[in-house]
Image 1 (tube, rainbow, N blue to C red):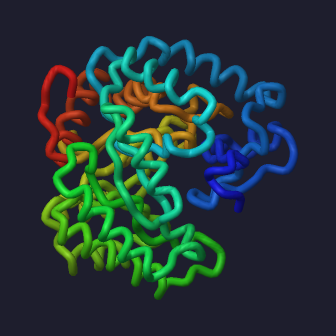
Image 2: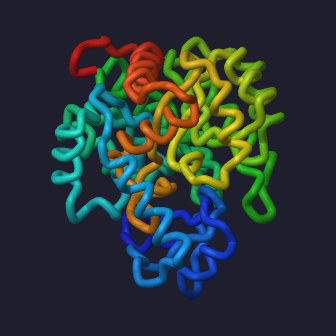
Length: 333
């Protein structure tokens, strides 16, 4: 895979589209290593939208363009990716105008940590997490764990350091090196415990092993299960362990029926909102670069699934995130 810093990645997910709609979006989709979903080879694919998608997404855009009038926190982004290099400042200005007041930016490998921190320091709305993502395991070296510990030591107590992540286990990748993934994951869980930081988790086809590791380490600050798409039973287990469930664009697609059923039953004190920008675009913004600017629309769609006002979900998510990260709950989050 090309370097994230190179700007050659195009990972805008089609995971929510029905098969017929996916086939209409043109040739040669790429694969997002972090999510395993077929993705568009280009930045925008409007010309290939099927009649289904054009009709459905137009309706969704009209429905959710009204937004949410409550402060929001995006708990999972990759704003350091080159996808945002051309207009990152404008995106951040727009987020503030939309009351997306805090944005968590997660590291995925050692060579981008410096860039991530420089971007974070330059903008008070950003908060950094450092970690070694399981999908990029071929890039990780044992000494990177020592460097991660050094970063956490240097930044200990800094108000813009918020977590260890993105870390976890990914058994969906082809021929996963499970022992190596588990070794890195448990070492990073130990760092989260040692530095009293939350852990931001990537979990794909690995629930049993992730759950077992969390029970062994018993983190002082728990964390977030990013892009949760599991069962009711898995949700209950993570909640029992003190973890929040990250909800984003995947559940906004109308055919994600199991997710809809599970989300409708989640207690509000267990959820936080996220975008995973630039990936996992919601249904009302298909085939575009995902952005924290879409968080109000995602909030509205998820609140509709829960049959509650969007302001109530926004408030709960913001309060949950502030509690987890140790941020003051003020008018500006």
